[in-house]
Image (cartoon, rainbow, N blue to C red; front, side, top):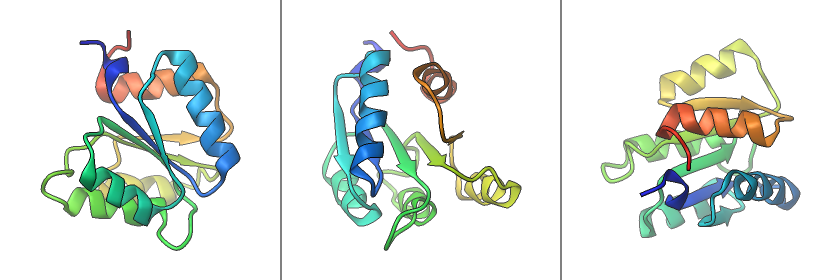
Length: 128
């Protein structure tokens, strides 16, 4: 089975950013893409579905991407879920906090399809 068959959850409080990431994922070859507008919605979808990858923004209200990541890692059923954090900040302390919380990879905005593909491949293996 190709890794592009994985169901991907894109989490961002900006609809435009969700659309951009969805378009990039489609370019790479992913077809099963769901969206969530915040961490709470994402958690509900993750707990009710079968996702193979989460791509989440860091800066969201009321639940940040970091809080979502911690919730995912604390959930017995979700704890090994591949999780990529997207952020506009490349501050070292953010990267460290995300790594300590168990993030699989980290993407700094802006990014293109090639960067996204490389980051995803580093987490789930070769695509397509």
